[in-house]
Structures are given as C-alpha cells and as structure tokens.
Amino acid sequence: MSKPRVGVLISGRGSNMMSLIEAAAAPDFPAEIGCVISNRPDAHGVVRAQAANIPTRIVDHKAYEDRSSFDAALDEALTEEQIDVVCLAGFMRLLTRALVMKWTGRMINIHPALLPSFKGLNTHERALAEGVKIHGCTVHFVTPEMDVGPILIQAAVPVLEDDTPGSLGARVLEQEHLVYPQALRMVCEGRARLENGRVVIDGFEMAPPPLVVPPLG
Ligand code: GRF
Image (cartoon, rainbow, N blue to C red; front, top):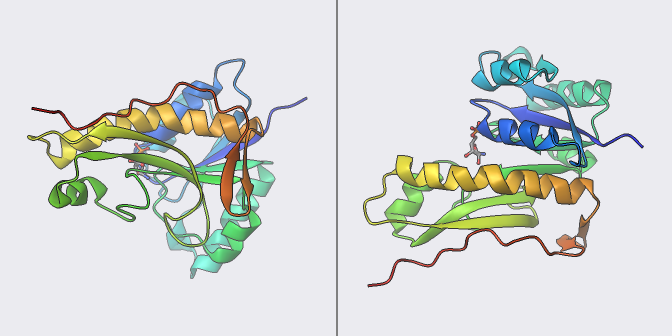
C-alpha cells in the first residue's frame, strides 16, 4: 500500500520542513513528503527542499487578487500533487475558511508557543515580556480561526533568567523539530484523530517530551 503523501507549505527558512523531510526519509515513516509549496519565490526552504530532491512549487500570493483565488491555486497545486495531508511549516498566510474546512483533520500546523498562550507573531518576545517560566511549541490541527485548533502535541522548555528572544526561540525550535515529525507520524498512522473537536490518540505511549520546571533555588 502506498504511503500518504504530505504537502509542506512554507514561507521562509524551512527548518521544520527539513525535520519532516529527514524524518520521512526513514523507511518506517508512515508518510512521504510529496511536495513543498512556498508562497514566496525566494524562500530559503525552497532551495533546501530541492537539495533534498523534493518536488517544489511556488504559489506566489502576490500573483492573486484576493485570498480566495490564492487559496484556490494552492488547493489546485495540492490536488495535482495528490497530497493527502498538509503540514504548515512557517507558512505566513492566513487561509480562508473554505480551504481549511476542506482539509479538516488533514491539515496541521506548528506554532512556537504553548497554545492557547501567545497566538500570533513574536511569541518569544511576548513570553519574555510576560515573565513566563515555561514556554514551548504546539502542533495542532488547523481550524478556520488562527492558532486555535485541537492540540496534537506540545513540548515545553524553561525560560532562563538571561534569555533573549533569540536564545529562547532556539531552545523552542529544537523541540519543534522533534515534535512535528512525531505529530505527523501519529496523524498518518491514523492514531491521532479529530473527534468532536478534540484530538483522540490511540496507544499514546511515546516518550514524553522534556517537560521542564523552572530552576529552583
Ligand atoms: C517556526 O518557529 C514555526 O513554529 C513557526 O514559524 C517558524 C518557522 O521556522 N510557525 P522554519 O521556517 O520552520 O525554520
């Protein structure tokens, strides 16, 4: 039986995309990366995907007059590439309700914060400004409202006294690269499903990500 085909949507450097490509290179991974689509022609991730021999496409949002026509072009590209599951990996465009609804349960996103805290942009700056002691990342199913969908997996990291947005972001990114492939695996194995707006996971037995409490004393 052929493996589900994953389409990875990017806008930038593509480090999460690379973590998915590298994970999917393992013979026992339950999915193959069918295509990488960027809305930015100059995204560094496109070069990285090409170097990894993954088919790439550019669907430049600037070439479309509104969100609906851009999303229609995206959907057409995903259909032509026979994509079964979509991973948003640093994809910086809001998607229309119509597109998201079409892909319900088959489209996931990674967000650099422990949702529902810090939706949106500049999450590391905001976490530092709020003085939180634990920060992290979340992989969730995509729903029409931004950064809100049912949560598949999260990883937490400590916030240290001398952290900058850069140092904290790097600590979180390390965890992103671990949990995104795990989440994709669970979805493609059919072990993680959406039921009544929540995620149900069969046989949840993987090692927990490193949950770290604030340093004491
Ligand atoms: C990541 O921090 C991801 O969580 C967020 O955007 C960033 C993309 O980085 N959605 P990269 O392109 O995967 O390196």
